[in-house]
Length: 298
Image 1 (tube, rainbow, N blue to C red):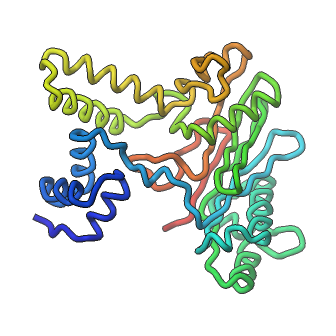
Image 2: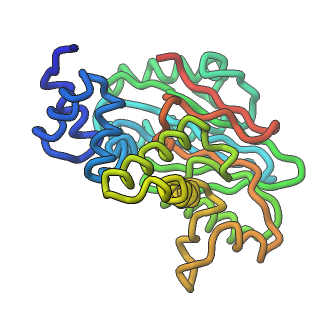
Image 3: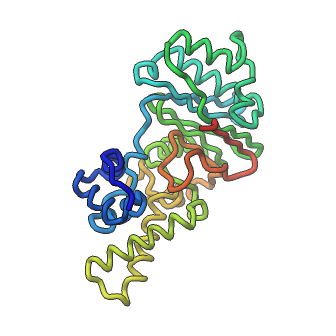
């Protein structure tokens, strides 16, 4: 059995929000398997998975740019070492300029974006190096997403320069686009609909729901039905169309219902930082062919 270290216990505690002793016990019972220990804690206590992974990273900013025609745009995540530098206007301007460069060109990845020239200040990479010298911290362009649409239009939302959304949608007016982008920032959906949620993640939720029901003493014949209900509830919570609109006057209207009432649809969206995912460390592949995304190598 793997040695249970203090750092392992600390990491599990941060991920679940549970006590040190509970986390150590779970790690011991699962032989040091972090994922199995996290699932065990969720089954036994209903702890929320990966609480820490949904928190905003303090050391970084988001830059967004959308062209005047509303058809092309980009979102860029720039990382730094401290929250103090994350508030620096030079860093914020850099993030905005890099987003504009990503939108106006078609870089395949972060490396290609680094070679793009910024207005009056050399390339992205040269400007980054100069910023490192000026601010005294490591600065990195971590990842970006670029959208270009012919039939639809783009909208965005930026909260405190740390949470950003770029949205590709069709139908409705500009206010709808702003409302949808704001909703995504607040509710952090993983995908547009259930097709964007991985089979592994659904299987994990089903397994956890089954074991929780069994632990609660529910009849074996009812476990499958109970688990299916839990999975459907999970999918509504993590998909954009299934979520209740944050500005719904009746507190019940879903995004799907809102879109139908406006004759609108969502083609793709990008949220930064991304919502918690089971396997991906970067952004998921865009949901339509008119979009591109890239991240720096670790």
